[in-house]
Image 1: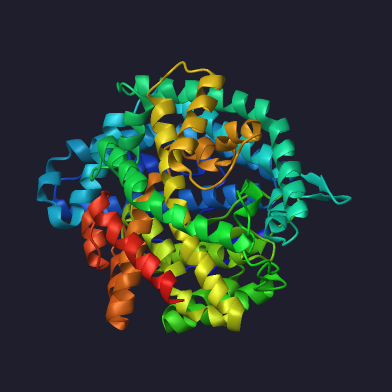
Image 2: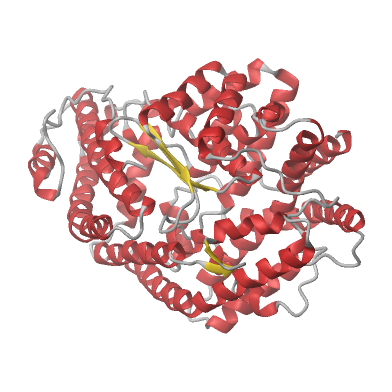
Length: 573
C-alpha cells in the first residue's frame, strides 16, 4: 500500500476553528488551540455548544493524525521510521494531551450553561464526559503510554511469526489455508507446525501479558476502583449491562447454543466417516472437496464485494467504490504486515480505512464484508457534528459489521456457483452457531483473569483449559493439551483491547435480528439498519437496537429463537 495516499484525501468538511493550513506533527502545533478552549468564556448554552463543536474539530484533526500513524505502523511492522513515529506519538504527544482533555472535561462539567443544553441531544455526551472525569488520574498517563508501547510490541511479535512448511516460510494466515485441504495428513502436519511455532513465542507473550496485567491493575487502583474489570466496564461505557449479564449470556450459550454446536459437529463427523474429530478436522469440507476459492487476487475480491454491496444497496456500493478509488483498502497479506483486520476512521476527513490480510480463502470474503459494514457505519454517521457521536457503542459498531455479512449472504453468487454456493452459505451459517461458545470462553476467561489478581501463568492456563472443556463439544483434544493451554495468546484482544469481546456476542444477537428482519421486511429492514447507523453514538445501546429493528438482550430467551432460525435455514439448504 502507498501510505502517502492518506495524505491526499479530499476534505469535505472545512475547518472552522483549526487553521486550514495547520499541519499537526506534535503537541506544540496544537497547544495554542487548547489554550483558547481552556480560556473561552462560556456564559450561554449557545456559546457552550459552539465550544463543544470547536473542541470536536480539534480532536478530529488530532485523532486523524494518530490514526494515520497507527495505520502505517501496521501496514509495515518492519519500517523503523513508522515504528518510531508511533512511539513518538504515544510517548510525547498523547501524554501531554490527556491532562488537557481532562481540564476541558472539568470546564464542561463546571460550566453553568450546561443546564441549558438539550438533554435529548447532548445527554449521552454529558454522561460520557462525566464518566471520563470519574476515571481520570494523572498517575495513569505514563501507565497508559507504557500499555500502548506494549500493544505495539505484541503486534511486532505476531507480525514476525513465520512457519517453515513444505520447504517455504509462511505467515500464520497463509498456513490457515492448509486447514481447508482434503488430505488429513497435510492438515495435521500444518496444524502441528503452526502450533509448535506459536509455542516458541509463548514465554515472550506470557511475559508481555504479565506486564500488561500489572499495569492495568495499577490503572484501576489509581482510578479508585477495585478491579480492572470495574475500570474497563466504565471505560467502555457499558451502562446497559453488567458482569452478571455476561454470566447470563454464558449460561445461555451452555444451554441453547452448545447443543446446536454438537448437532453441527455430529453431522460433520458422520460426513467425514470419523470416530472422533480432531482440531484439524473442523474447517475442512466434510465431504472431502477442496477448499473454496472465491478469488485469486485482492482486485478480484474488491470487485466481487463491490457488486455484492451494490446489490444490497446502491449507495453502499458507491461508498465502497469511493474507498477503492481513494486507496483506502489495504487487503493483501505479506510478510511484516501486522496480523488481523480492522477498520479505522480518519476523523477529520470522515472517511474509513480497511486493513486485512487476504490469502484467497472464503474467510477473507467474510472479513471484507464485515469491515465493509464498519466502513458504512463511518459513512452513515459522518454528518454527526460531534466527533464523539460519529462513533457508536462498540457493541453496536459490531452490529453494523456482522449484519453486513448476513445481508450479503443472498448475493454470494458473485463469488460462487452451484454446489459451491450452497456450501459457502452452509459453512457461514454453521460458523455463526459454532462461534457462540468462543464468545463465552474468551469473555469468561477475562472476567476470571481480572478478578483474580496475582494468579500464576499455570493457573491462567488451567482456567483457559477448564473453560474450553466447559464450552467445547465434539472435538477430541487428547494429547494436544500443551497447545490448547496457551491458545488464549492467539486472541489479540487480550493484549490490545482487554474485555473487548462480549461486544461481538451482543452484536451477533443484533445482527441476526437485522437478518431475520430483512427476510421478512426487505427494503424496510435495510432502511432501519441504515437509520440506526446514522445515529452514531447519540443514543443508548437499547435505543440503537430498537432503531435497527431488534431488541437488546443477552439471555436464553433472546438467544434461543436466533439459534432456532439458523438451524431452520440450514435445514432448508
